[in-house]
Length: 339
Image (cartoon, rainbow, N blue to C red; front, side, top):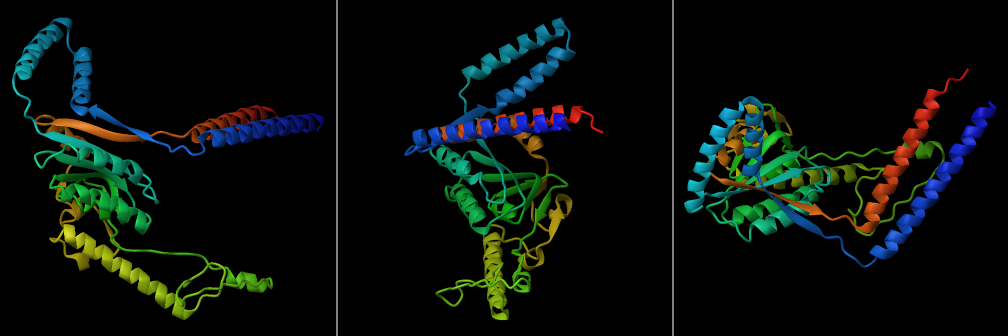
């Protein structure tokens, strides 16, 4: 027991010291970062070189030195001929969107689209590799509006879905002139959902009053703590129905071939079934599609990397250090045997 008491005292002192250091560092970072705006940088990678590197690495492992030398000689001659010819290959700009409930990736997407629109022409193509199960209406509405800029510029937009594009994710996908899906990707969920708990009866049970004051008949319809009324529920449902109708209209605008009332039920379908519903145009993985395009086009992957502020970097480093410390302490504790 004496060992436990000493160890607990040591652990408390260590954690207190680490927390104090974190607070000081974050405060200093906040002072230094005050008034500064976090910026980012556009990263451009030529994907043709990436695919070429994969092939060459495999050749080095499988071919003999003589075979490899002969192949490199042939490849070198072919590359020289290509360099002499005018480079008239079309360009394909590849973007990624990995969506969370807030569609946080929109911040990078908007800059990537702004950049490519300065150079891209209708002869080029934009490929979006999209993964999202949906989220907030206004967040995905903005993300979809960013993609609509590409269509408005007359540039072909192809959306590739390998895993999921549902709800707000499908709202983004439907803007594509062509939607390509992996056979077992999840698509659809053209619907709207809202849910919240209500603890008003629990508060009443413990004689706790909760007051809600509003100016405007429908400023608040359903609440977590207040007593909900049937009139409030009806208004809330009405708002959901309006949002759903706007969602359906938006999808119909970009995919008029859909029987919208049949697919806008909130259901989801796997890719193999989504083709029959015309939710997607073709079954294929994004890797397969891009490898095919790399044979006849120049592929450029664009990624706008957000540059973290000093405060964010210090906070991340501090939290990582704290996690390592706790992990180390836990390992030491778990190695002890107590009776």
